[in-house]
Image (cartoon, rainbow, N blue to C red; front, side):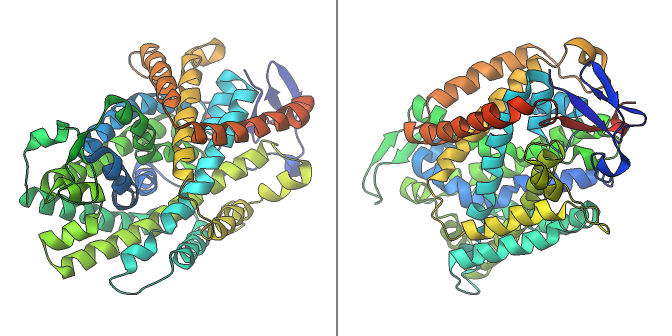
Length: 479
């Protein structure tokens, strides 16, 4: 079990079983300001799940490969995420740190496992925002035609500016945008069900168009293809983990983290699955469904005016997702510096907090500005890498949950999942199998990055174990 620091230490800092002298006030780990409750945390977390932008940007790719099996695959992914959410809820209330997964896994499973989780999470959070942001141009097309790269870069820069504000202000901003995207998803669901072409049984027909034309026939979606698609299905519902990243800024995290995680997963699953089912049942034919042109189907079901409204709502949802992702990702980077993952000069810069809003402004800039630059890079193939990374990250979190009731953690005040240890045991087995069914190229890319990270651990972090990679917990969570 890794060493853990509490901040700010009163008279001593607990480092493993040894009590170390108190740090100097100016050298004590910085602490984020608690300013949000369950409502604010849920709004921010739901905005990171961003069901509408996921529905319109990511789900079309699933329709193209899974056809009518898309809803079933997402439903299975959501069911798996219930177990994952249990793990996050228990670990997040035990270890309420802005470091999120890496803080939880480091504390329970050791520093190397925590470091690898950090690398996987950093890979996900740096790639996903610009990829989604580039989808803005497609949904602004009814009003103005923009280059996807420039539109995505503008969204990332706007999200960066918003991320410099405090969380209370951002909770209201993202809450307003969230209402619009839920309305958009609701309109799509109503239109799809109102123009039903096939019955509920179509959701389990497991068919996909064999070609681009309506007369090209169909083919059956295999079980192995569904298993392979589960990595992306896990990705489209994974935003509930944002609640753990925000736990250090939540009031009463021992209760509110679990409530926010579980509430967010439930709401996002409904907001995503209902429109997917409606689209599956309402698509004119299997070829139209496989094409994934949701905007075209909406326009055919209604009018160009409704189609334009939906497109603009989706564009706002993407901007909303960018804001929340920058907020989340900057907290991860901030926490890694505060926990001394890098050389001292880098840690000092990344751990700086703004005086007025208390946000980690340097970390925010270092997440948002490179994200804007990444909009000019072809990132299509990195969706597969992201799916592998999310699955691997969940796997390590499940392993940590298996170890969460040892020693002093056994009696610590925290939310406890039902059916332990069965839930994490099943998750480990299922997620390992899902990983084994991913494309070799994506596994190799992710494995290479993990290999480089392991070398950094062996050559830099491990030899400096007394002064590097020490997970920090806020002092006020020990009551």
